[in-house]
Length: 377
Image (tube, helix red, strand yellow):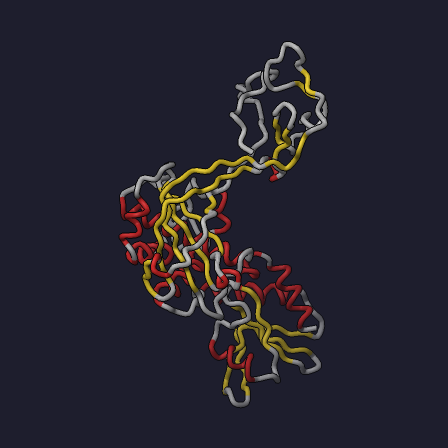
């Protein structure tokens, strides 16, 4: 529904004191509801994995209120208040929000909850289609997908603003699963860059004209942080405008995906980071003091048909059972980061290979350790 307008309730004083603590709520990033162009001729191919499409379309911004509980709206008088506020009275009898000398009170009883505030605006949009192949997967709703696409979105907008000499607020980027069969299967995702000025200013059209240069500069931003940070910092990706997404920025993961998109390179993680995560998991397993189970880091063992193999984490039980524990990239589930380990997993059934998500090790180490212990019995 589209109300004729918004006004402050007539029965309430304006909150102007610095001691006032209004309920906080934040608007979402702009969402693109337009479908992906089905006609291949409308796309500009950069390579077989990357293509661009420029358009002018509507974007939608919403606000779900404090604690994401929406707003309660009285369909009799039009009064609306955050659902999460304990003092809300819209659901019962209340004062009308506008002056009414005949009857200032509304009987209530006609309220609806969960209303979301929103507005839409038309602007210039650059749609970027990203296509991947197995073992890579960009499944919607997975943390690794959100982290990789959010990181690349921020890097591209930073590179574009620098190339065009724009303020960082002039361009924004968001992502979504591609509205195609490949998108439903996790094989295609879309990033869209848009002008924040309603009506558009033509900036994203110029970004499209820059083509591959913007993406190569974005990769340089991700790979060459002046502080050599672990995930992100204010020298590479972080800024005030993305303050709510700092936890979703990981330049190493973003760089591995962007490097694959540009050059087809397998999305391997930085060896030093992989070694640090492996050591972190091994130390946590050793701290459990499991009776009859021994853990060793970087253990060499001879396997028939494979020669000497280095196990990232070697496990041996008193009964003689052996296991190898390794890590896989967040975007390549169940695929070892090491070629030799991949062959052992596939062709050597005598020693099971247990794989753990590198991101899970860093973000939820206790759960990862618990899962490994259950698998080795």
